[in-house]
Image (cartoon, rainbow, N blue to C red):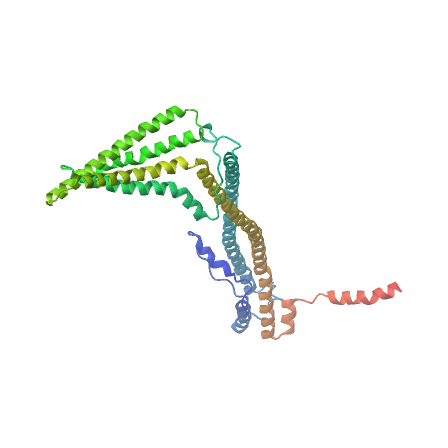
Length: 400
């Protein structure tokens, strides 16, 4: 039978660096067997006779003294092992409490963010319903987009940027080809000049669309907005015309080097095609900007932020609930461990010692086989049971 004093968690003390290793635990069955064997060895040694306790005044055998000394040492080892094991449990409890406090602080922050996002969504909803002014102090009535999934929200938010990037890629390709057709533009020069050029092709239509959008929503500075839009349009159309002429020069030169010619009609058609292509790309950006409602886009962003905050809030609440249920379990485990080690130390220091001595005495008196030695060694039995029996028999007679 395995010893009840053996600690399964004792190996966990090695998790803490710097602590010396402890010896193995005491096996009580082996210890009691050793006590019986010690009695047999003491009898066979001939060093003790039956008059030790009657004439020589010996009170205890040397083995009994060694049992007390050894089990005192074992008790110290159990206390040390208990401290190490409780250190592990304290660490687990403190880690859970620290994580709980951290999650609680995070929960408060998430609650604040969720409330803020909800409040901003309500503000945007009032603007879209036409009940409150929005950007530039204007009215921006519209419909709040219906969000079904997070993916749908991200697609809606990235739509404008995707259109801007697509038009920019097409424009920069056309501009680079046009600049490469000029003499003296080799290597990286077309790419360097194409960057500011494509900025004109993208930014001017975008600004034109913003001015048109302000005028459509009743901005008080209508004349200024119209004038700015016209100036931007003139600059943008001039840029388109310049790019068209550069491209046509390259086409004409290439055809002539091949021994052919371009008719007047074909030249007009090619120029018109290039102009229409560049204007169409810019117009797409202008219409996309002029028809867009910035508050609808902001509404999508805030709805996504609110949904994310609520999901994080729910996840944090579930983690806190789990940790709150775990902390009492860890505290109970720590309390039981403390009581178990206290009982184990007490059992080793008292119960096992008395049991080992009792086994030794019984084996020694059996080996000696002398009534006088047994009486002197074990002493006269106390008449407690006889007194109790006589008390039980006399009590009914007194009652009568």
